[in-house]
Length: 157
Image 1 (cartoon, rainbow, N blue to C red):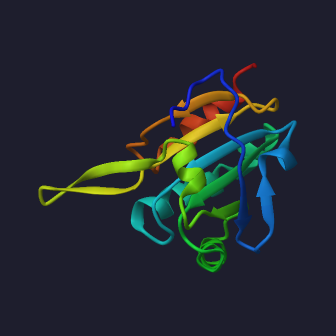
Image 2: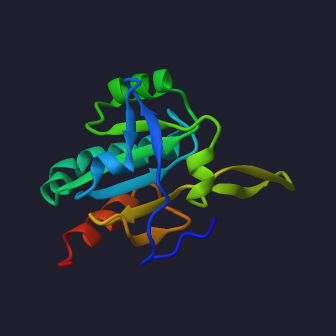
Image 3: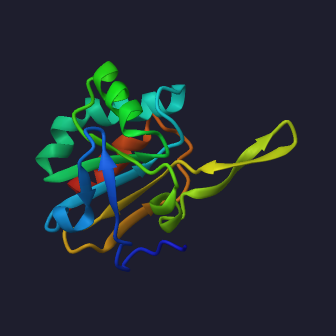
Protein backbone atom coordinates (compact mmCIF):
# COMPACT_ATOMS: atom_id res chain seq x y z
CA UNK A 1 0.00 0.00 0.00
CA UNK A 2 1.19 3.52 -0.73
CA UNK A 3 1.38 5.88 2.21
CA UNK A 4 0.69 9.46 1.15
CA UNK A 5 1.06 12.55 3.30
CA UNK A 6 -2.25 14.39 3.63
CA UNK A 7 -4.31 11.20 3.29
CA UNK A 8 -6.11 9.33 6.09
CA UNK A 9 -3.87 6.85 7.89
CA UNK A 10 -4.82 3.18 7.62
CA UNK A 11 -6.64 2.01 10.73
CA UNK A 12 -4.81 -0.40 13.02
CA UNK A 13 -5.45 -2.47 16.12
CA UNK A 14 -2.62 -4.57 17.58
CA UNK A 15 -1.63 -6.14 20.90
CA UNK A 16 0.89 -4.24 22.97
CA UNK A 17 3.62 -5.58 25.23
CA UNK A 18 1.05 -6.28 27.98
CA UNK A 19 -1.39 -8.05 25.66
CA UNK A 20 -3.82 -5.09 25.49
CA UNK A 21 -5.31 -4.03 22.17
CA UNK A 22 -4.16 -0.61 20.99
CA UNK A 23 -6.02 0.98 18.10
CA UNK A 24 -5.84 4.22 16.20
CA UNK A 25 -9.42 4.96 17.29
CA UNK A 26 -8.29 4.89 20.95
CA UNK A 27 -5.71 7.59 20.19
CA UNK A 28 -7.94 10.02 18.29
CA UNK A 29 -7.03 13.59 19.13
CA UNK A 30 -3.33 12.82 19.69
CA UNK A 31 -0.26 12.88 17.49
CA UNK A 32 0.92 9.31 16.83
CA UNK A 33 4.51 8.39 16.01
CA UNK A 34 4.15 4.94 14.48
CA UNK A 35 7.59 3.52 13.82
CA UNK A 36 8.29 0.18 12.19
CA UNK A 37 11.42 -1.79 12.96
CA UNK A 38 12.66 -5.29 12.10
CA UNK A 39 13.36 -6.94 15.44
CA UNK A 40 13.72 -6.47 19.19
CA UNK A 41 17.23 -6.58 20.68
CA UNK A 42 19.16 -6.02 17.46
CA UNK A 43 21.78 -3.26 17.33
CA UNK A 44 20.02 -0.68 15.12
CA UNK A 45 16.57 -1.37 16.55
CA UNK A 46 17.91 -0.96 20.08
CA UNK A 47 19.63 2.33 19.18
CA UNK A 48 16.42 3.69 17.65
CA UNK A 49 14.26 2.66 20.62
CA UNK A 50 16.75 4.04 23.15
CA UNK A 51 16.97 7.37 21.31
CA UNK A 52 13.16 7.66 21.36
CA UNK A 53 13.45 6.87 25.10
CA UNK A 54 16.11 9.51 25.64
CA UNK A 55 13.98 12.14 23.87
CA UNK A 56 10.81 10.97 25.61
CA UNK A 57 10.34 14.06 27.80
CA UNK A 58 10.47 16.38 24.78
CA UNK A 59 8.24 14.08 22.70
CA UNK A 60 5.71 13.76 25.51
CA UNK A 61 5.67 17.58 25.87
CA UNK A 62 4.30 17.79 22.30
CA UNK A 63 1.36 15.56 23.28
CA UNK A 64 2.48 12.74 20.99
CA UNK A 65 2.39 9.04 21.68
CA UNK A 66 5.15 6.76 20.35
CA UNK A 67 4.33 3.22 19.22
CA UNK A 68 6.92 0.82 17.85
CA UNK A 69 5.70 -2.00 15.59
CA UNK A 70 7.53 -5.21 14.66
CA UNK A 71 6.64 -8.84 13.98
CA UNK A 72 7.95 -9.83 17.43
CA UNK A 73 5.58 -11.22 20.07
CA UNK A 74 4.13 -9.26 22.98
CA UNK A 75 6.40 -11.29 25.28
CA UNK A 76 9.50 -10.29 23.32
CA UNK A 77 8.36 -6.66 23.43
CA UNK A 78 7.80 -6.85 27.19
CA UNK A 79 11.37 -8.08 27.72
CA UNK A 80 12.81 -5.44 25.34
CA UNK A 81 10.93 -2.66 27.16
CA UNK A 82 12.04 -3.91 30.57
CA UNK A 83 15.68 -4.35 29.54
CA UNK A 84 16.01 -0.83 28.10
CA UNK A 85 13.45 1.03 30.29
CA UNK A 86 11.38 2.13 27.31
CA UNK A 87 8.54 4.50 28.34
CA UNK A 88 6.32 3.73 25.33
CA UNK A 89 4.43 0.71 24.00
CA UNK A 90 5.57 -1.75 21.38
CA UNK A 91 2.95 -3.45 19.22
CA UNK A 92 3.09 -7.04 17.98
CA UNK A 93 2.28 -7.67 14.32
CA UNK A 94 3.43 -11.29 13.74
CA UNK A 95 1.41 -11.63 10.52
CA UNK A 96 2.72 -8.19 9.37
CA UNK A 97 -0.82 -7.12 8.42
CA UNK A 98 -0.42 -3.54 9.70
CA UNK A 99 3.23 -3.45 8.62
CA UNK A 100 2.08 -4.19 5.06
CA UNK A 101 -0.79 -1.64 5.25
CA UNK A 102 1.81 1.01 6.05
CA UNK A 103 4.15 -0.01 3.23
CA UNK A 104 6.82 -1.19 5.68
CA UNK A 105 7.19 -4.73 4.32
CA UNK A 106 9.34 -5.49 1.31
CA UNK A 107 12.88 -5.82 0.06
CA UNK A 108 15.22 -4.41 2.68
CA UNK A 109 18.60 -5.09 1.14
CA UNK A 110 20.75 -7.58 -0.64
CA UNK A 111 22.68 -10.02 1.53
CA UNK A 112 25.50 -11.80 -0.25
CA UNK A 113 23.75 -11.13 -3.55
CA UNK A 114 20.36 -12.39 -2.33
CA UNK A 115 17.32 -10.20 -1.79
CA UNK A 116 16.11 -10.06 1.80
CA UNK A 117 12.42 -9.39 2.45
CA UNK A 118 11.21 -8.11 5.79
CA UNK A 119 10.32 -5.00 7.76
CA UNK A 120 11.59 -1.78 6.22
CA UNK A 121 12.60 0.61 8.99
CA UNK A 122 10.18 3.51 8.52
CA UNK A 123 8.01 5.95 10.45
CA UNK A 124 4.62 7.54 9.94
CA UNK A 125 3.55 10.63 11.88
CA UNK A 126 -0.24 10.76 12.19
CA UNK A 127 -1.96 14.00 13.20
CA UNK A 128 -4.78 14.24 15.78
CA UNK A 129 -7.39 13.89 13.00
CA UNK A 130 -5.96 10.58 11.76
CA UNK A 131 -4.24 12.10 8.71
CA UNK A 132 -0.68 11.26 7.69
CA UNK A 133 1.35 14.37 8.43
CA UNK A 134 4.82 13.02 7.59
CA UNK A 135 6.18 9.74 6.22
CA UNK A 136 9.77 8.56 6.40
CA UNK A 137 9.62 5.55 4.01
CA UNK A 138 13.19 4.37 4.70
CA UNK A 139 15.12 5.31 7.79
CA UNK A 140 18.84 4.99 7.14
CA UNK A 141 20.19 6.19 10.48
CA UNK A 142 18.16 4.58 13.26
CA UNK A 143 20.00 6.41 16.04
CA UNK A 144 19.50 9.92 14.61
CA UNK A 145 15.97 9.43 13.26
CA UNK A 146 14.02 10.08 16.51
CA UNK A 147 15.52 13.60 16.66
CA UNK A 148 14.17 14.23 13.13
CA UNK A 149 10.72 13.12 14.28
CA UNK A 150 10.92 15.39 17.32
CA UNK A 151 11.82 18.40 15.12
CA UNK A 152 8.67 17.87 13.07
CA UNK A 153 6.55 17.45 16.23
CA UNK A 154 7.90 20.72 17.63
CA UNK A 155 7.03 22.74 14.51
CA UNK A 156 3.88 24.85 14.61
CA UNK A 157 0.99 22.94 13.00
